[in-house]
Image (cartoon, rainbow, N blue to C red; front, side):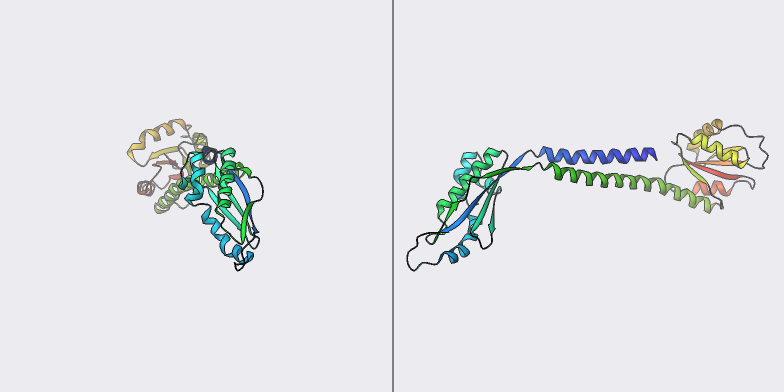
Length: 286
């Protein structure tokens, strides 16, 4: 069980480290934001009113801010393409306020602030709301680091580690219990009705546990290999167990050594052919 726990913890730590590494590998990213506010302008008689113009025209700012004509000069200055720069630009419209927030992401704070300021001024120069209204910059760009988000990464790493650890534990548990279920089914098929201990061959306390079981049965131990490939292992276990030939009970305390996987037809056959005085006390998955 300790080995399974260590394996599960190891898998959890590896997954957590992988998530944190993936976040860090992406590198830093900064976002700079600037506000644009629509205000009334001196309009010629007969033109549409301020509110109507802002309501109808301001939504076009979302696409205008990403257009090549607005981005080309800034893209050249930053050494990138208008298509790549457009993917870093976003515009948020505040309903019924005439306010828009333009955001730009870049690998450095300086590039993000430069791009936000340049693009905002280019949008203002287009004069989208003329002649009834005009956009103006509210303030200087505000820049913050948005990646890596180490708080979010830590949370994701923790969740991923828990899932990985539980998944590994469940997988190893299923791999361990399925052979045991097959062994118990084979024992039942062979006519064994009493409880039988199923042990792993790599259990460090295997010999001691088998010794206790044989002593409790008050019979001499007999180790049986159900397939020829396990004969040597059965002989090693038999030699490691204490000599109990003077035990008072009739028959033998049988320890069956079986393959660790697959069906157990041989076990059922061996158990069914044991003499009447023999009692199966343990099965060793080798």
